[in-house]
Every structure is written in structure tokens, then in C-alpha cells.
Amino acid sequence: MSRFTRLLLLLLVMLALCLAACSDKEKEPSSSSDVSQAPVVDPNYPVAIGEIRIERRPKRIVSLSPALTEIICELGGRDRLTGISDYCDYPERVTNNLSCGTSALPDWGTMEEADPQIVFASAQMSQQDTIRLQQMGAEVVILPPASDLDGIAEIYRTIGIILDGMEDGKRNGEQVFAPLRAGYEALEQAANAQSSILGIYLRAVPLMMATGDCYEQELLSLIGVENAAAEYYDWEYPADQAVNLYPDLIFYDRSIDPTFFANSTIYNTTDAYKNNRMYPINALVFERQSRRMLEQLVEMFKLAHPNVDFHLDLDAPAARDEASASEEEDEDVLRLEDATQLH
Image (cartoon, rainbow, N blue to C red; front, side):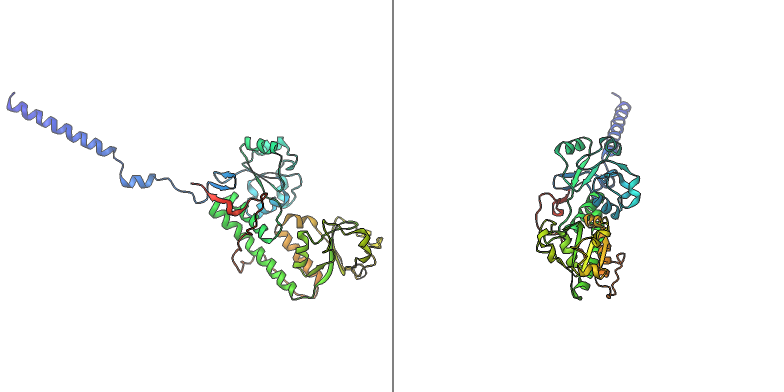
């Protein structure tokens, strides 16, 4: 082999090695590429609350509870409501949504049209209906009415987390409820500075009224009204004790015809009737436990204590942070402490 040939072969080998090295270098990812391709961790989703798993922010929601519909709207979720119950009527604009029946009797035609990712209800649904919704791809969230203020706060937080995630949603739920809690506390403080007045809250005639075992008893106390039916139970004032019913003030559901009282010896002999201290209220607001419940309590306080100058700005920033949720366990209620972010 000539000297020229050996030199040519050597040059060819060196060229091949250089090309191979350059090719390997191109295949190796750079450190900057690793950083740019790293997955972004969402601080909000996926999230789990008990057995419920929510992978991403829901875009289509059905509420089969008038109470939860109001709170969903307060938390900014109205535009994501694709369906409501037959009884949802507030805020008025929700009535433009599909009516999907009730938790006891869903309307499957409109439910399928609404195509929900989340279905909210205040009462348990049948196992068959729950399974059918799950097969449609919906998570079923049951949030019964709360029995105290901490329970209401937890409903706001839980719905917030479901709507907008572990961080943003929880923060939104707390921020929306904070001025309401501050309002309840201000109302209670104002009531404590006044002499209590003996009264009742009549839900239906003749003697269905708030008794000592119901949440409405606490609401009456909150506005400085001593409940004349506090020693009884199950929303029933005994007929054989009606002769002893002498309230100074009566709140009654506005569905009751006021002429009833004029013709009833149970009520037309009371100081409440004689002094024209009979006030109609919206009983549904108490059942819904939304912002409107506080607004109605403020009006009731003013009626009970007309000489007190009391004003409440619910849109003002809250003066304190949200209190922690009640630690009492309730197997039927989704507990916020069960909420975890999945990774």
C-alpha cells in the first residue's frame, strides 16, 4: 500500500469518527431542554374529597339543590351551570338553564343534554341514579344543610374547591364567606346589647313553628328573640298548650294568609297581634343558608329592635380570617379535612 493510500485511509477514518461524535452530541438533550420540557404542576387539580375525584376544573355543572345553586352563583360558578332542579329560582337568571328534575326524581332527558361533570345535591340520591350519573362521567356531590355557622362555612369552602381547585377554590370560598361570618358576629353583638323579646317563627298554621331542636332556634337567638317554643321539639307546639302561647312578636312565613290570625283565638289574643307586631318572612331563605339568609336576619333584627340603628355592609372586607371548620364528624357531609390534592 502506497504512502498516499495510507494517508487517505487515515483521513477517512478521522472524518468518520468526527461525524459519529457530532451525531451523538445532537442526540443528547441539553439541560435547558430538560427544564423547558418538565411538566408544570397544577396547584389546584387533580383534587380528592373523600371518595370523589376531580381531575380538572369542571366546565359543566348541574345543581339539584336550590340552596347549593345560590352558593354556586355566589362563588362565581353560575356560567358553568348547565342544569338546575325544578325548584331552583334564584338568582333569576339560572331559570334559563335546563330543568333536570330533582335528586329524588331526575329528568334523564335534560340531564343527558346538560352533560354534567359535577352534580350537586342536598339530599342523597338513590344508588341506581348515582351509578347512572357516574356512568355518564359525572361526580355526585351531596352537601346536606348545615346545622351551624361553621357547617355553612365548610359548604362554601368545599364547593369552592370543587369549582376552582385546592388553592384558588379554597381561597375563594373563604373570601366569599368571610364577610358573611363577620356579619353574623356583628348582628349577634348588636343583639346582645339589647333586651330580648319573646317571639316565635311560625312556618305553617296552626302550630308548626321553630322549636328548640332546630337551627332556626339559633337564628332567633342570634337576633335577640327568645323563642317561646324553645322547650318543644320537631317543629310542633302542642295544641293542648296553645292557651299558654303569648308571644310579643311573631315572624311567619309569607305563604300564610294574614287574615288567618284575625280569626284564630290562639293568635288574636296575643300582644304580638294586638300591637301589630306580626311580620311575614321568606321561609325558603332560611332553608337555603346563602347570603340571603343573613340579609333576612338583618331585616328581622330591625323589626324586633326598631329603636336600634344597625347597618351592615356585606361587601366590605371582613375584619377577621375565616374560622376553622367544625371538627365534628358527619358521615353524610363532605368534610373539608378530607380534601387533598392528587399528584
